[in-house]
Length: 142
Image 1 (cartoon, rainbow, N blue to C red):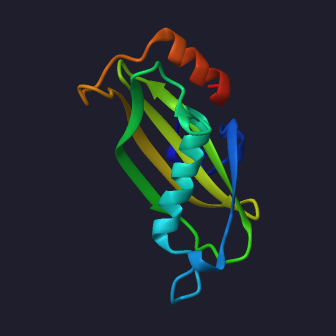
Image 2: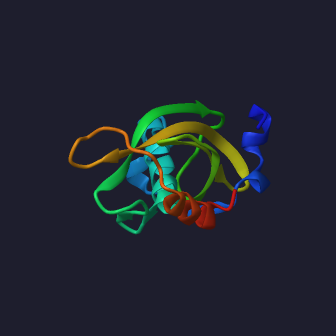
């Protein structure tokens, strides 16, 4: 996907709404940059976790390995941010995820993350099964 496409809402199929809080703002009156990362996390949770539990097989979970975040616009309280999430690609034991934050239909940030499936006992990466992939694709609809 071209970088400009990351800012277009129609490229995202999985959506999460996050209500901004006054406490999310900083001394300059805009939403703090750390809150952007937290909103992206909430979107990822919608895509690859079922409420609290990982959509993967028992004994495994997904962990964040890489996060690239581009800030495009300031956000200000109050409002509701829409977090768009899509799977860019599957690897053997990882996913590349694209996300965007929209406030009042304006794209305020985009991100690219790498999520790795790990075995909870060994803490090492483990292959993503066909069943896990199908479950995630059903939610995110690539």
